[in-house]
Image (cartoon, rainbow, N blue to C red; front, side, top):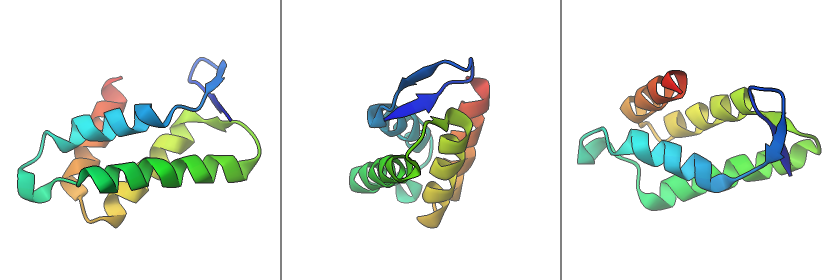
Length: 90
């Protein structure tokens, strides 16, 4: 499965990158507001399945939008805010 990077190049989908990015946003909030490791894994798995269902390469911005939505579904709004900030800094 492929993704389209910001540069326009195609790359292989790597769920570990989603886990790492959400994890970095997650550790910036107080423990009571953090996602569990299982929730982060589920987010990555759901995004991976969604990409696979597309049957085409998906651009990284769309994937990041989906990740934000998945984080918010868990009510982890501070994590989502920090993920968005992290995303734009990169």
